[in-house]
Image (tube, rainbow, N blue to C red):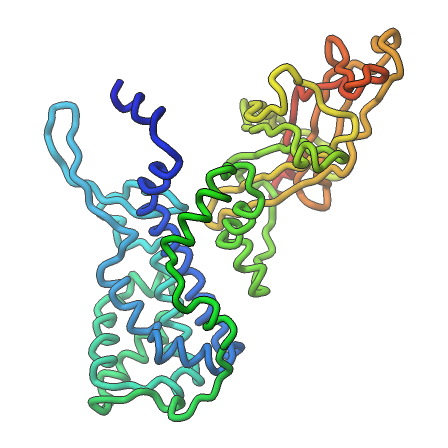
Length: 412
């Protein structure tokens, strides 16, 4: 009861502060992935960026504590029904903490692999070896990783055999006590004088308070398109697209984890913000196999949940709407695709007397055979039309009723 009362009374700022640690952790995990991408494309970076990676921030040494004391692995003490305490291990997988059996603790997750891949690119690249200034401290830190490079690790990431060879060579190598790098004796770079003059002397606590009171306290995360776009930057697909390394996903019979369908107004964007209604679609029941001229398809019904309404009494879909659906796939490489229907072109009548003449059902399709996934949307005629403000023509005659998802079956 006290918890329910607290949740109702807490402010947006209280909620942000409570979730700040989780937000910082997720940001740090995303930053580790970005660091790996920078290391992978090290040779394409400007000289100033290369110097910051190797000397200023020393990505190689920075990865060592992340492997020695991995923040994405934790041990918890829980109590069972008999109040007996036991220890469980959890790993951070796909943005969630999942229980891991003790015998599977050495199995690499994506977060752990990011650090090892960054080390691989930095230690096995000729340009990195030539520019990285080894000294006794760096050598001591890097050799701490040698004990982890066993056969089990190499079976999961075979490229680490090159890292183990580098460690063996490093152990026999004689290095100076102090070194700042071979390529950083003279570095000329442009300094942003205008930016420095703007940010110098600012009280950033006051700036953050003003921004919260004037901007962020007046909007919600679900309606803030700018915030959504910023969050999407750190997704796996977006990062790989930016770096030109997006995988070619085969959607044939991949497992669908969830779908969000958005009905958007084609017109009157300013008034309605573009979004009329939002639905969650979930796969329910068993799939049926259908043969067609384009091959064999697996067709599954989807359960529809309405989570956002423009108005409580308005269940209809405007005739000038369009649709798009975000489909999330789960598996070894989770990813998301967006299917669009640019125009629904729903029937529209001039008078209520002719409303019954409209077809009872209208079907629209998102996706295609070429995209390896199809969503069929069934729109049912309303019991009565919904008119616009002038009440001279109907603007909404149909509602979302049913949906099916079809995927090609894997060929034997």
